[in-house]
Image 1 (spheres, rainbow, N blue to C red):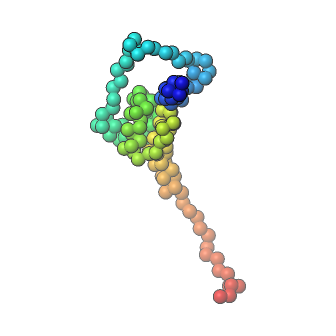
Image 2: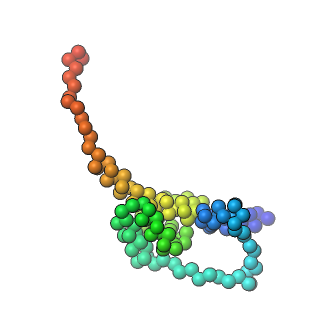
Image 3: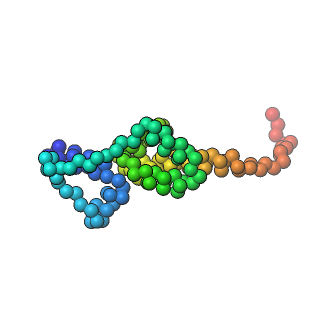
Length: 137
């Protein structure tokens, strides 16, 4: 019985946040397919060259929305997103879903650059130096 619970937990952890939400809302369902009848879907893995290209595109994206849209358009699997996080040195939890991983990638690339630019562009205004002649040392 414990093995079934582990398999069930693994299946749930591999679902995207959207799939999980749809399941909870009753818009989706889980179905058992016997191993000998299962049709394995061909999943194309992202090569290291493609990972490099995707990272370059993320680093030049102007907005978080552009980066997020680009990632969605790539139809990356959770494992592909994890490859990106390794290259970008971003920590992810095993329990993080695809949406959470995408958000971390976007924030660590575009979000970090936007925050850094905002800090650099902020001018710190200082008033005249105050003299306090009442202080005795």
